[in-house]
Image (spheres, helix red, strand yellow):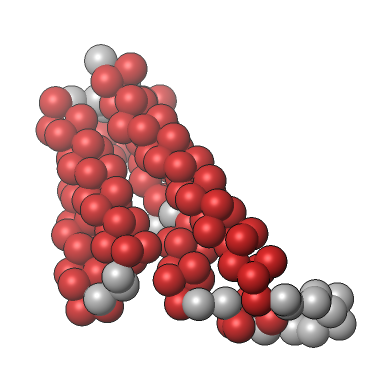
Length: 139
């Protein structure tokens, strides 16, 4: 059953790789078209603000996939190591991954912030459910 819980974690890793490819597939041509000349003395990220918003959204989402999902990976590893894998954990993990993919698509394709925030909150609820299962395993 541990493999069943690791599958959604690997799926989210693969999705992060997809977002990396999508980010650079749009960013590199946009940089070329913009004529940006990079200045190593400029503050980090300042020059990329010149790129179109639709290009920056993909990079923003790629960064977001390195924030809250780190907690997801940690709780998945904990549940596996604690031998606390359950069908509920698998359902919550796949729910979290599915919602994060939707979040990526919403942010990358149009970025309506109120909708994106609602999707983020739904993903957080699934993640908090995993935290609850982890707490039940140790307390």
